[in-house]
Image (tube, rainbow, N blue to C red; front, side, top):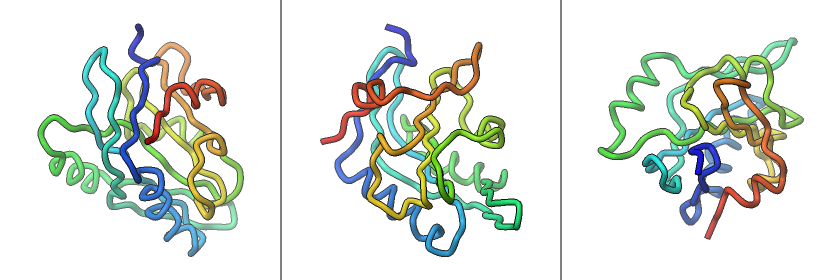
Amino acid sequence: MMEQSLPFYLAKGLLERTQQLLSGPGREGYEAVVVWIGRREPGEPIEALMAVRPGQIAYRAAEGCAVEIPPDALTELIAALPAGLSVVARIHTHPTEAYHSPVDDTNMLISHEGAISIVVPNFARAPLDLLACSVNELHHDRGWVELSHREVTERFIAP
C-alpha cells in the first residue's frame, strides 16, 4: 500500500477542537491555521491525536485574507512536539469557499509525500465537516491534489 493512501484515525473530539481553534479568528474576519499532531509511522495508519494553533500572523486587506506561521513560531511548534509525534496535517480557513489556492500551494508548512492540507470554508463558523472542506494531498510529481468525497469518507475515520 502506498503511503499516501493510508487512513487517518481522528481522535475523539478532534474535529470539534479544530473548529473551536479556527472559528475564533474567523469571527474577527481573519483566516487561521491549525495543525494536527499525531503518529505517522511508515506503512501504518496515521493517528491524528490533537489540534494545535501555532503562533501566526493573519492579514486582511481589500485584496483578501492570508495567514502565515512565522519561522520562530514554527521552530517553537516543532521543539514542543513530544517524542514520536509530528505534524500530520495542516488545516486552515478561507472566508468563503473551500479550495486550495495558489498561495496555499506554495505554503510548505508540511511538504512530505502524502501530506494533507485541509481548507475549511466560511471561517469555520459551522461544525467541521470534512466533506464541506477541500481536502488535499501532496504528490511530489503532481502537486496538491484534491481528494474526492469518497476518498475523504474512506480515509478519515472519526470515532
